[in-house]
Length: 288
View 1 (cartoon, one colour):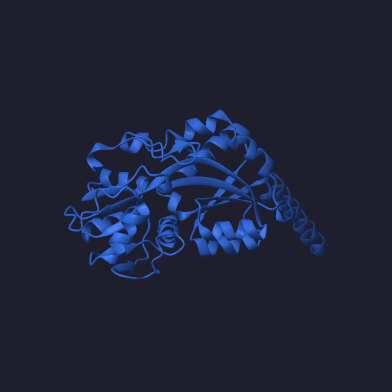
View 2: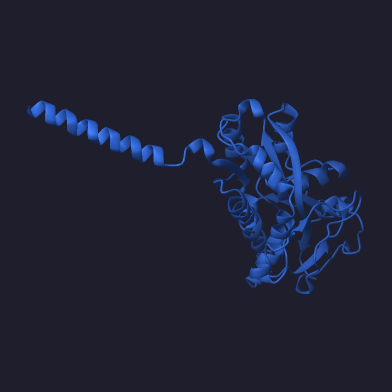
């Protein structure tokens, strides 16, 4: 009798557990979006997630991480979507066929900042490639952002065009990105290539650049893209509805509101500028 009661009790607990499990939303319904950590501080990814969840009632999990960890997660099918810039590691995954259907939704730009005194008269240089060449060949300190970051990749792209060997001259690598990277450049009165959004956020915290040398150039445009894991490797639903969401008017509105509440102006512009033109961004007087 005692064993029978115990068995009934265990059966009851099992049924309760099954009911609780059935009431919980299945994990397969939560879309996992990997996000380059460069985009965490601006709040863009969070704003898009909130808009998508409100419109579709589908859950999104944002995974902010380093390029190395994001690559591992994508290869192991732990993510369905990636939010990134034009990083070289992302392009490699596109060439491999792991990532497909690139959708640029917004852009900002990279900006060269440096010390107030321009001893080698580079301030009037029209070409960012020539500017970088002048800086690297000078004795002035030039800081580089963390390897794999959009800032570092932007540097490498310009460096390949100017013909200089990486690591030459006054170049010094760091492990910093975003606002902390801007602050370190300003503190050390060095040169560096930074994201405009990070520059604006740092200025809002009272750390303004000593001087802005290069901005508004086509070579410095920084797209923000969503890319999708190849359908053969996807284990969760939601890719299709997320793609549809990204093409809607709500996304444009969400993109151009990011930053307004914090610093009084948008940090991104929806879409991309015309080929050969610089970024379409609001000019910030205190930065110049």
